[in-house]
Image (cartoon, rainbow, N blue to C red; front, top):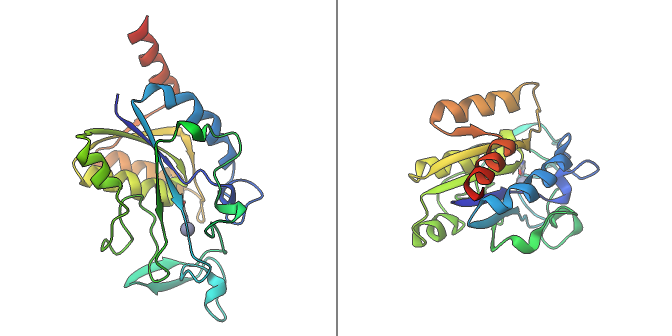
Length: 212
Ligand code: VGL
Ligand code: ZN
């Protein structure tokens, strides 16, 4: 049955939030629906200190969307978002968060960003998610959440690199699309890497067939 990884289903990524992902709110109902198809549900949470280096506001004269270098890697500058212990970093309203067994925070080091739920962007420090899955002998994960072209993609690709079988629940994801088509290109990249692209309807139909 595998582990479902919910990526960054947080207020600041929903319409009206600080880093709003278009139609990001539509992922919540999909997340809730597919939880029952998995043995275990875990989540990642973007969890930045106020002084985080990915915030344009922390670099004089810079605006969101510009590129800098942070922690030795190329970095898009973002609006201030998902600051630790603020309403913007809380899980989305309506998410069945009581079904989440463990939460892995990321982006806590002000000197480097972390799109992946497994490692910082410089791949030097880990969140604990990889160890958690390995200790449990997990071999299969499914990923959904926000945003397709950043944290979902990075999380799914890292899971694959760790040797896991990875499904992307595509209707449970939405993209930032800084450039039109970024989300579609991210999905193509994941598919080409060996990630299985599935829909929630397919998962639910398969689960139904097993219990019938
Ligand atoms: C994300 C940009 C900055 C994401 C997080 O969750 O995809 N994107 N921080
Ligand atoms: Zn962030």
